[in-house]
Image (cartoon, rainbow, N blue to C red):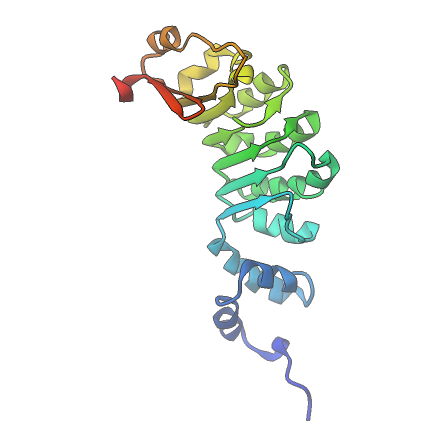
Amino acid sequence: MDTPTILLLNDDCLVCIFQYLTLDELMALHGELNPRIDQILEQQLHRFKHFEFSMRFPPSYGWNQLQALGRHLHSLNVNVGYSIKAGEVLDLLPNLCLGAAQSGRLRVLKIQHVVLTGDYIEQILLVAPFLEELDISCSSIEDHLLPNMLHLATNLKTLAVSSEAAAFLDISLLRSLWHLKINWIVGTPLIDCASLSKEYPLLNISVYQSNSVFKFGPNYR
């Protein structure tokens, strides 16, 4: 008697089974059996629209699995850590962003505790046109890279940056924003939020310092 195999099951049976699997369990099967199984597996990835991880415990997925997941993401939150080597992050981020760029579904991107160099920005640019919210408030970025990235983020509504990065903002880009969030780092200058709020009366501004929040704009008057 032949040993039963998952490949003998019809598509409806496989869907019933896969709907109970966790993301890690689905990823363990993806790319390991045959294209038909992969296609049915990917139908389950819509359950994982929001993906968050720390580089201290990174996901152990292959490039094809990361791309498949990226195609279904609506939000991505990566906590890097300044002690983590860039190469470790760039083994994961490009395939997630490539998959997200293929589908155009990603709306929220948060990357924290990292120095955002050109290598990182290259990946963010893949998804920038689709983003409605970008949070790099706990990361640092080379001053010339931020304007280039934001010029492509034409659908951006909420931007969160550090007070250092805010100093290099192209003010003209604020016309399309709904909310600017600033992480005020001790010892760094802060842009004149009161004057900015008057110049852009539809823009809401929140400034975070320690446990305090200072708010400007139409929602806070």
